[in-house]
Length: 367
Image (tube, rainbow, N blue to C red):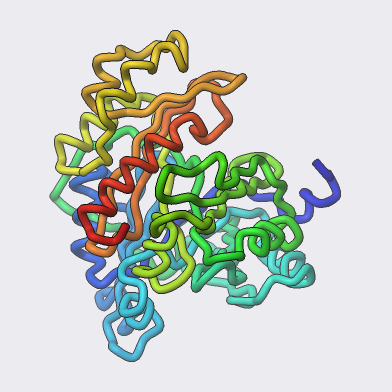
């Protein structure tokens, strides 16, 4: 890894992920009820914002914002019209938002937001931003001089409705789907503009079934806290999940967010009890599981009953499961992941995962 190429943009972690939503109040209720996120902060008419409403929720180190337009002539409303509910902003926590902006823009980043100081009685936050694939943006958030609940302009969100957390700790990775022939372009963007390195690469021989295929490159920053797999379609007999996403999202965007837990059995059982739907994995997958992954700490009957996938690499193993899309458009979904030493992304599960997705596509009539 080139040290000179990775130090100009030190990133402390993911600050927040913002979704543009048709109805932020109902989206926030769903994520609280189904996923166990807790109310954090609110901004809207009551705080003096006449154009949009935002609800911030948190669980562990994961912070989601759901924002909806209050006026029809709005970038937020247009985003929802084109894409449905989806990720607009991936905000990165940095020590210096001005330097982050300058360093990335001079390397070719397209400016989204010049450095801006937001302040209130609790201090100040500096934010800046650049564009990435599709209409997605990266914000750089500098909050070392702020002591408030979340961001200036937000107030503490207090409610009598309480839910239990489901065990999410942090965002493990976020996957972007891009159009035909664009994977290398955006991998180069993360390498040249943001100083990331390529962690791993998969081609259509690695990720394919009888019908569909894709290619992927995983880009990561120097401290490995930020990992962005970039997927593009590959030629197959039928339409792949990436093509389906691009058709319904109407362009490139965030396909899924991988949420880390340290007890996937507990987390998935909780989510299932709350109505979260997951992809189905046939019993045949589990017949050969002990031979493929060796000894694991978890009970195999629990793994099978919850439909959790397991894979091993040279450093350990991981457990993972994927939800069905959480919206009517077959776009955004979630991965729940627990790492027991493994640094990889479940290559041994790709075929089973793809076949599960294809069964869903057949039901939707989009395969």
